[in-house]
Length: 317
Image 1 (cartoon, rainbow, N blue to C red):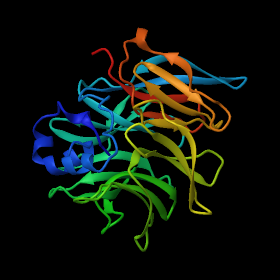
Image 2: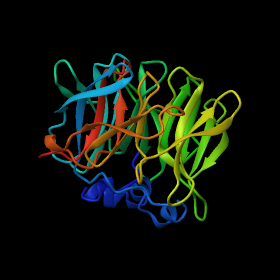
Image 3: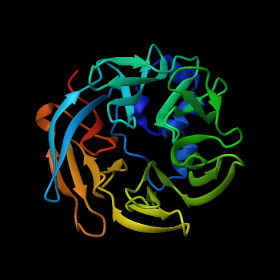
Image 4: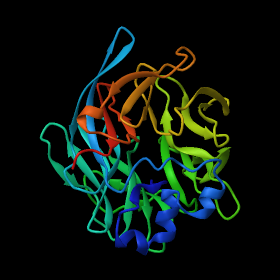
């Protein structure tokens, strides 16, 4: 969902659900006091989504030109590819309301997926391929995980008792990794949850907002904010339920993604970097989008084939 200053300039709706929305953004005093360092305020209220072609030439990642896919001047964020790689889901706040939208890469058409009195964030294709899951801010400010049929139809609640959910990752069709916001005096936690029973296991405290499956392994990754200056990308082994460090993040950055080749992507300002954990010693710059007018790159999403990435940044309006 949202966890930072991404909606500072978003108007009345955020104020209506200030308690929930600000927690999500990560601006609430409770959330900040429990995190070794506040999340970077890199994404402003106004943000756009860009598509970039990607090639892997002899082990080196190469990127093409950027193409902006969002035209609405406001908050456009949290891109997520569908399984065929031809469409992208994302969150956009329009008319004081956060809803899920879909962009078709072939037709270049944008359609609205949700249109509800509540706000929906972090759209994610579910393992069945027929539904998407999203974190919904309900009328009373409760943040829970909901299911929305791609073909249309009423939504349904996925987890009744587990809240407040910030971000989520499907491990399989009955297991989730969840970023759970901490209550008073408690840190944010990373939890593994069995959906039918809602049985939860806390596996880390002070995680970052990005949870990803590691390609070709029975593992997922997360950023562990160990201290103000030590942010580490870790792997969690789903067989042994143990964690191990992979690499440190770029300073102050927590958004990352995996290419199918096993390379990690991170961004800092207008630059994109790559690193192969446990092999590459340092982050290697693979692209600078300054000339394209991009600033403050944050979230990164990779298409299923790894031939495209979607990035969120401040671009030219």
